[in-house]
Image (cartoon, rainbow, N blue to C red; front, top):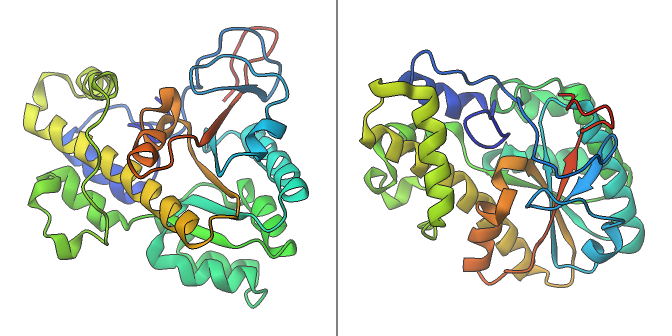
Length: 286
């Protein structure tokens, strides 16, 4: 499964979906974006899985750069840090958006960048173990780089309780006042909806009702829309600042998820970069 789809390990949300789909295989971080040729470790692919040669200079000219990852794959985070260092060098003053944090924890990100928190305090203040749960050592080098370079960090996500509600009841049943300011998602591409239908049908089996699958799709679209709106607001506030954002690759593949929502918000040209851990021996390594 792709990070950001049913394989995401954002615990509060997928705990909700697990209740809808008892026994489904929802292992975090399994699988890699498809590639069409041998890229070598941490090669570069675009949203369609095609290899890209030296994509960073072109991406740096964009208003928004979206970096996909498999959350538990060490090499992806090494790749992200290298990309971030490049973007910081050629476009100093950039902002880093993070799927890993709900916006309710923005204060912890601000405290971290200001240098007022220790690493342990930052992890506690951000409620890392609850809202994300992966080994923090996968991400701390990136967070240290951001702090050392006075790089603003932007929490992109929403609280797990909201996703839990949507996963059980559907988006339409959530009162506007309880939506954390998130607007109605743009209708998904038909291929995206078909893929989500297929993913859930494969793992849920005949026990999952059509309404439950629809609620799952609502939860996925909520994630995509919430992150897209956070990025769009940041861009509108400071249109000259490059925004680089990190999230699961499943939100980016084929430009179906966040890029599609960004396009509906007036940002159709976000650069999308995905890592491949495809080795020249032919076996993907998670």
